[in-house]
Amino acid sequence: MVDMASLPVAPLTEEQYLQIERAALEKSEFHEGQMYAMAGGSPNHSLLANNIGAILRGQVPPGCRTFNSDLRIKVVAAGLYTYPDCSVICGDLQYFGDHRDVVLNPILIVEVLSPSTENYDRGKKFELYRTIPSVREYLIVHQDRRHVEHYSRQDDGSWLLREHIGAADSVAIARLNVHIPLGDLYASALDLD
Image (tube, rainbow, N blue to C red; front, side):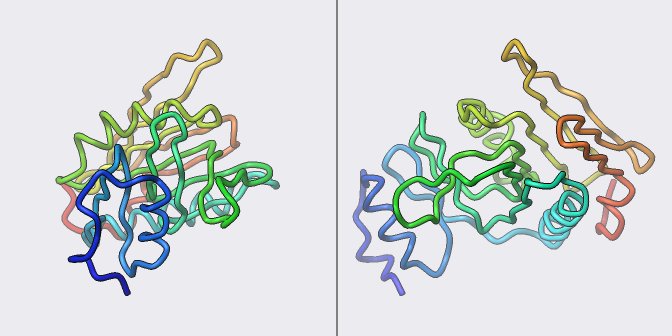
């Protein structure tokens, strides 16, 4: 167990962060020398993260794997270490360092919005995710209504947004041959608008 009172104030090196994080009971993200504790999610947040993982797990092509929020991903260009709510990696996992607990090559990243992280998830964090060469798809899942924002990297490097709203709509990710019906994704969600 890590005594939070004894943690260095700042800035931390990446090595210090990883040493602290590997011994900690709770997860923290890391960026620009600072650790940021990850707060617990709401019931809808947890449910939607599980649902999207289950839907993806049942559909991704052979050679691809679906991961939950326990997988630490490094954004090399920005020195960000983060735990997306869900991610998909195709082919071999590319690790950072010898510990094999930091991965570099997701193709799809999913974040379920929380009121406290919404601006970050759709703003700076997405900007940083876009610097990962392997990332081709980014899904933002709203937890208060049936609404998914699907960003897809185009061949010219630009990003295309497709919004999906309502139980009858669905998200199609052609490069993974994945189809996500919003009715299934939000099937047992609570208190939706």
